[in-house]
Structures are given as structure tokens and as C-alpha cells.
Image: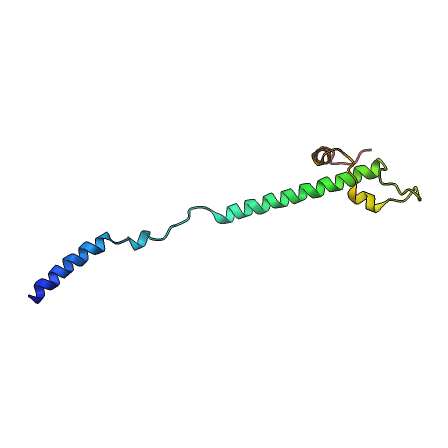
Length: 107
């Protein structure tokens, strides 16, 4: 009787173990390349930062060329406070476009 009970228990346990989750497939595997996406996001951030710096540099260059930030008292000096806040062109993308199209200085 002991052997019959063990066999019955074995069959019941086998039946219940088949209904349990497969532990090999229990954890999700990610097929996304996180390193590549992270590198892409860092590259986009660097490009965005460089565009801001380029627009700012071109804005200041244009202000200096057109003498928009000339000191009021000493005409040969530059007003640096004005240079930080001046808008030499109407939009920032005009500064970027000009800087990208004119890579060498005018002669």
C-alpha cells in the first residue's frame, strides 16, 4: 500500500508540476541593444549642445561685425553685457544656417 500511495502521489505531483511555470522562460530577455541606443542619445545631446554653441557664437560674431555692441562712451571698445544679450538676427536657426554655409572667413 505504501508503494501504491507513492505512485499515486508521484502521478499527482507530475500532473501539478506540468501546470507550473517553466522556469527557463520565466525571466524576460531583452533583445534591445541598450548600448547602441544610449550612444545614440548621447550623440543627439552633443549635437544639440553644439548647435546651441554654434548659434551663440555666430550671433556674437554678427553683432561684432555689424557693431551692434559698441560701447557708448568709448567707441572702439565692446560692451560685453550687450554681447551676451544681443539678437543679431531674427531667429536662432538663421545664425546656425549662416554658420553652416559660411565655414571660412570672408575675404
